[in-house]
Structure formats: structure tokens, C-alpha cells
Image (cartoon, rainbow, N blue to C red; front, side):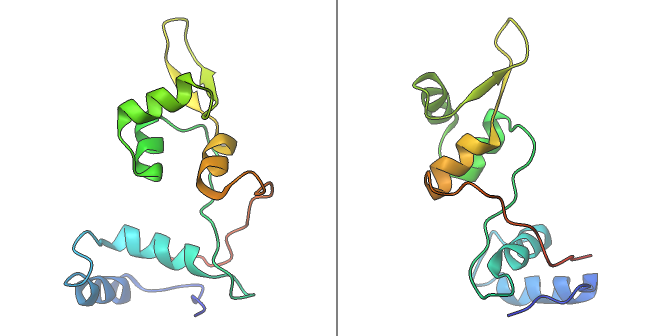
Length: 117
């Protein structure tokens, strides 16, 4: 399936409405993200692009784990943190999240080819 360069909001809304009985948590933003991540030109699934340092809450959502689990992963070194303040405010490096999600062999980051909206 190839995503066209532009998909109108009306099409996204209609598709979301049709799919919601099967995926109750689906919303237009999630559908667009899924379409972008589905395939590249070669037909292989793509991985989401993670650029900026992430908050603990963002990492918990990406990994599908609780906040205490993210804290444990930061403390035992599985997730690398970037300390922002002396009092403990930190962000998590995107590379360490990619390693958890896709394994250590994923070094290069894919580029997004489809632009939606």
C-alpha cells in the first residue's frame, strides 16, 4: 500500500469512522501515524522516527509500560538519560529507546517518504 502525498481530512475522518468499531482507540492522528509507519517503497515496514530527547511519559507510552518501569529502566542503565537540572529533571535519548524497541542492530534511522496533511 502506498500513501499518496496528500490525503484530505475528509478521507482520514471517514476512514477513522469506518475502522473505529474494530479499533476503539483509533483517532485521526493515530491513523496518520500508522499509515506513515506502514511501508516504504520496498514494502518493508518502517519504524517511527524519533529525533528529540523524550520525557519519561513519552517513553512509557512508546514502550507500553508504566512510569515506574521507565524509572527502573533508567536507573539500571537500559535507558540512557540526559540530566537537565541538578534536581533530577531528565530526558531519555532516542537511541536507547530505539534499542529497546528494535534491538541493538538498528543503527540508521529511516526517513519518512509520505507526507499526510
